[in-house]
Image 1 (cartoon, rainbow, N blue to C red):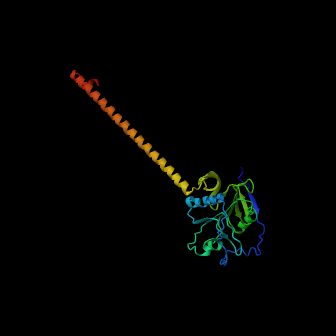
Image 2: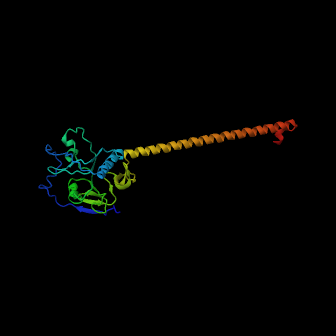
Image 3: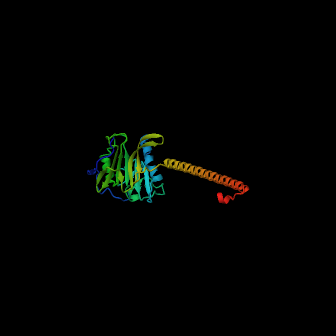
Length: 279
């Protein structure tokens, strides 16, 4: 099974918007009529679990001093009068979550509000609808998203399960090593069990290749570490007890040897022999 693509430059075709590129401005639009939530359930079980796995592991295990936002199925609004993109997973560094969620512009990812496009957008493919390698790829480049990731676990688009694109200028370059240098993380396909389901999951890992753990995995790892420490302490206690027993046996042996020597000396003295001269 091949998941490693060759490096490819993706040149962007012109957009079909009526005004372009002047429509694409990071200015505050009138969002009074903008629909930020439609409450439409669209996820399947694979996508739903995969979204949580990718977002929760960042919050539980991403070692960074930078504030960040990791969301699932949240609208990305990146230009005036341009329909939003709704990636399965969105990651943006150096941003803070707005405190007042009663304000409409604080409930989705408006580029004008956050001040920058996100670093990562991940699309999880479950069917052949959406043109994720065509028009949608161009849309994400137009939105200036640093990395565009296409995860195709059901192979709807071919044999390649994972594709990672990096934006360079106005062109996307398909990466072969899945390393997102601007984020400091790598993506990998991990075969294992998540929430009781054994599957080929898309996961984050650090520079050393260590998987970013979920909260449950961290707890289990800590439990195992504590159990190993307990066993080590018990073994050390047993070793100390054995050493103490050995020392006591050695002391007893020495006392018995002294008693034997004293008794022999006494017998020699009874026979008129100086024990110091013969012992």
